[in-house]
Length: 305
Image (cartoon, rainbow, N blue to C red):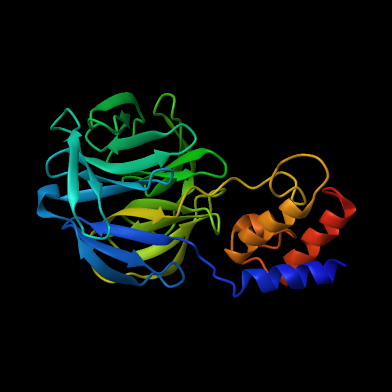
């Protein structure tokens, strides 16, 4: 019975298409590139319009599809259209001393955050006007960046003065050291990929692309991006990925005995290569072994086979 259900679902879903998202970076001269997360190689896809001046941080609102862009040339917030490169002014941050390199979207509260290197302060940015309101300062110096893990609801930060990795407190702007990056010498843009559950980093001194072990802070080299001054990094998806259900068999998290709706929800995630479909917890891209584990749990009617 289980194998007939698997065959039917696989026939309905067709070929597997992994990696439902794009890793996008921008440099200080407004050049927009797509980054291959497997190799680090960048491909130029456009240029932001000149009104954005010197460009820096990127942040993506997965719920509305808005891509925010920070300008350090005129201390303002923009909306960026990836198709045309057009940058539409939202508004001035409110202080010409700001150098807002760090920019990040928190989808748990719908809040846009930024970090300015002039005081290493964490700011909440008004999405309608661009006005930045100080939350608090970290006590660090030099450039800091932000990265948000939407699965664990955790905000992280890197700092180019210490070349280290931190957890950011969104309530007061303080940071807690996790560990040294041990490789990058000028860490910049951060972006979390919910499909493989990794936090990625660009370094514009080494021109390398990394992923970060969020438990230790260690940066793992993926590859060279090519020369440039990449500052902003963002992972663009089609909609907001949901957090993994606590019970794999009840994949749609509806409660009760797992049913056909859970099978459909699981295979949609599996077909997209979503990390939540890693039913056996082996890591990597979900495969046939994960399907077998899912159905063992599903047939058992719960989360314990």
